[in-house]
Length: 106
Length: 91
Image (cartoon, rainbow over all chains, first blue to last red):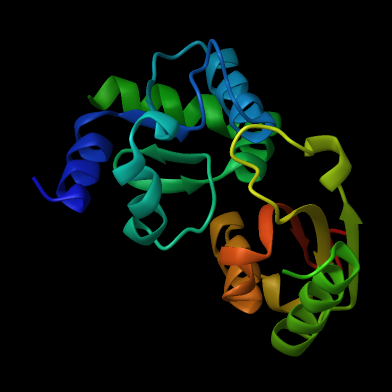
C-alpha cells in the first residue's frame, strides 16, 4: 500500500492518533513527550505511531497534511496541530472536550 | 549549514517579510537538545510573533502561516520550532 494511503487509514481508522518520536511510555523527544502527556492527562484512549520505527512514515508524514514537524496529532482524521497547539488546547480545556467527542463518535 | 545566529536572522527576516509583525522574539533553545536522538544538526528555537494578520485565524492556521513564511528553512536549518502566534490584542 502507498505510504500516504497507509497514513490516511491510520488517521481515519483511529479517533485520536499521535505521530511521535518514541512511544508515550518512552518518548525520544521533548516535544513528543509533552504532547503525549497532554493527551494522556485527558483520560481518553488514543493511538500512537512511533515515527522512528517507520522511516517511510517519518519521511512522508510532513507532506500528508503539509505540516513540517513532529509530533502531529489527528482527531477525527483532521490534523489538530503539533506540540504547541496541543498544549494550548489542553490548557484551555478544549483538548479533553475534543477527545471525548471524537471517542464517543468512534 | 548556517550557525544559530544566521538561522535566527533568517527566521526574523522571513517572518517580517511575510507577516509584517508588530513584534518578533526568538529564543535559541538548541543547547537544551544538543545530541538528542535524531537531532541531526539544525537549531531548536522558540518564536513569539505578534501580528494583526492572526486575527480571526485558528491556531493551526496561524502556525501554518509561520511555517509558510519560513519556507524551505524548516527543512534543513531548523530541527524544531516552538511557536507562539498572537494578535496585538492577545499579547
